[in-house]
Image 1 (tube, one colour):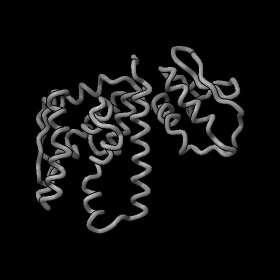
Image 2 (image 1 turned 60 degrees about the horizontal axis):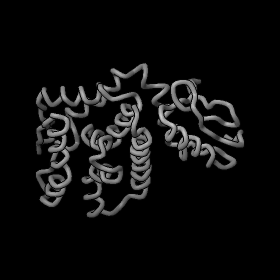
Image 3 (image 1 turned 90 degrees about the vertical axis):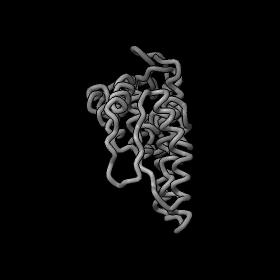
Length: 233
C-alpha cells in the first residue's frame, strides 16, 4: 500500500493516547480507535508511521501490530488467552532437559535452572524437571500459581506474554521477560539453546536463521512495549 498521509502524531484521546495521521485518528483493522494507555507507547507507534517510506512496510510497524492485537483480540478473549498462556507450564521448555550430550545438558542447566528457581521464588511456582520425552506431571499448586499470575495481567501485558510464550515455548521465559528477569536477547537465546547447539555441530541453515531473526525481533518488540507501559496502571 502506498503511503496516504503526510504526518503522524500522537496526543491524548479518550481514556488514553491516540495516534493520528494528518489529524485523523488511526484505527485498528477491526475499526476500533487505536488508543493506548501511555503517551510513550502512542509516541512510538506514531514514530513507526512517520518513519514509513512511499510504500508502507508493515514489518516495520511491530508496536502498531501489538496494539492492534491487544485492542481487537484480547479484551473479548481474556479467559481463553490466559488459559492458553498458563497451559505452557504443563510442558514448559525449561522443564525438559537433555540426558546427553553432556555439553548440551550442562548448558541447559546453567541457563534454565536459575529461571525455574526465580519462578519458584517470585511466582511461588516450583515446576518439576524431566529428562524424559514424556511430559512430567507438574504440581497442581505451581500450575495454579502461574495461572493466577497470568490472569492478573492487564490486556497489553497479557497480549505481550502470549506472543512471547508462543515464540519462546515457555511461559516462564515470557514472564521473566515481562518482569525484567531477562532482556529480549537473553530470553530468545535461552529458548534456542538446542537449535544453537545443533548449528554449532552441523552449520547454520540460512532459511532457519532468517526465521529466527524475525522471531527475535518480535520478542524485542514485546519487551519494548513492556518498557513503554512502565508506570501504568
